[in-house]
Length: 372
Image (cartoon, rainbow, N blue to C red):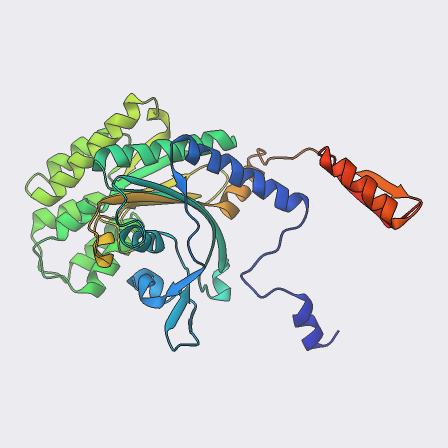
């Protein structure tokens, strides 16, 4: 087979194809998650596959967006995420709808990933957005929904690791920080590397008290008791203190709801898309070395589109959920499909019989040629 023929029968790196039982198993996962979303009274939204490129103009997405020029000269982009699109729709088409607005989605996003990264460019995501309403109630609600999704799928020993980007932001508030330094610091905090954090801070004019609190972020992880430690350590900084108080309220609500065994605090959780402003979380389970989903609060995003509203949401990656369930032995196995063979004295008679069977809901397979 020459090179041209080889390309014709292969899919490009980063995209996928599923057939038969593979597709059915994935559909079962999708249906289970959607059933939970609808059970909490979220409405489905099917947004466009592409939009104007400036809709996705966040720093984290810009380098991963597939963009192209439309016939009218507009710069367009295939959707690299759903949240920005839903924020735009809430501010535009749904501008007259009273908040809170509860929406869910299920579909593909496309992001450029270098081939050596070993990651997919075509991702199937299922998620929801809670736009408007009381912030702590909405935060608690979306975490409870994420928990129910994992339970409904039969995943075992999962945990929701919750944090708040406001703690990190509050510790940096008032300082003169270069963007490059902040990103290096964020990376070292996320990696739970106290020595690395100290190395970054060595070249920065920052008080000892603030520096020690930033180093402390790397170790403030565990059950709710770490929030007491964090609260005392950041008491001198109003923004960081408020962020800890907000997180305490959410963790307390989840514990009261019976989710204590599935909630962990991780104040080193400071990565993610640059539009997050408050609560952030990731869902983990044994069997994978990475999260199966996550999300957070993004109170400033809708203002970009002219409708300031507090908002929070999350998503699950279908591929990651499928991989987790497979490794945990919980992958759904749909029953085998059996079709009734339909044949007749002529193609027309066979088709007539097949239509009768279908009218009764029977799965049929038309005999080759339709004749006996």
